[in-house]
Length: 354
Image (cartoon, rainbow, N blue to C red):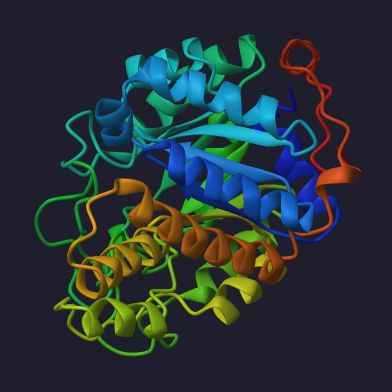
């Protein structure tokens, strides 16, 4: 099996100037679609599960599913990542179930709704990083609150999202504070706030520098050139997927996501992990609607799921190619998690080498 830590994968991505999409999953079909896309283009992958996904699918089911995917596709380095962990218990239980990486999102308090203080974020993220590194698991932290610069609000996703109105000081990560945060927490990757948000309804128009602050990414990368940056809420919400959904009975209002070309620009500025969930959901949902309308007598779930898997596979393949991930799976020699733990203990990790 080729299970890999986030740290090793992103170190390789930094050394070779590419980014890695992190796809969320809830079920077997999504996992197979992601791995088929990765196999087709020789790409490493990050598969991540939110607390909502863990509740939906059950931890044991998810763990065994990832174990099976790693066995079916042994040539693909696979990082299993906990998305938006809200406290130590969530993160450590993920590691206990075989996740090789966790996100401790201390930008919000444990209720996943209340914006947290900076000191709280530093303290809880440092504790999780220290404990995770003991067993060789990687940790992603978050500084700044995910949300819209247009509305000042955060969209809830699987129970995660700030409540109330937020100001720009909360919605944009401060580069100087980022330096202090990384130094004190020892995180392996840093998720930053730059105007992206969860869900399909990110922007009311094609985003420009006023509502998608790519300048923040550039400024942080200049101060932290060896830190792996992460863009959350970065589905592109393709127009063609909106059109498919609406042409078969959907009622999605016009919306805009994060353009792929902006993500690629972010990769050139140090972004190494890009979170994508909504695009995958839309790809599958469009096919569910199409089959239901075109074949109203159909009742076999497989007749809905197979086209949906193919649509998600194609979406994932497109992102793996666009981000430069393709062609890198066979170049990575996976380091065992126990060896990673020894490296953490010795302080011998070099972010410039894999």
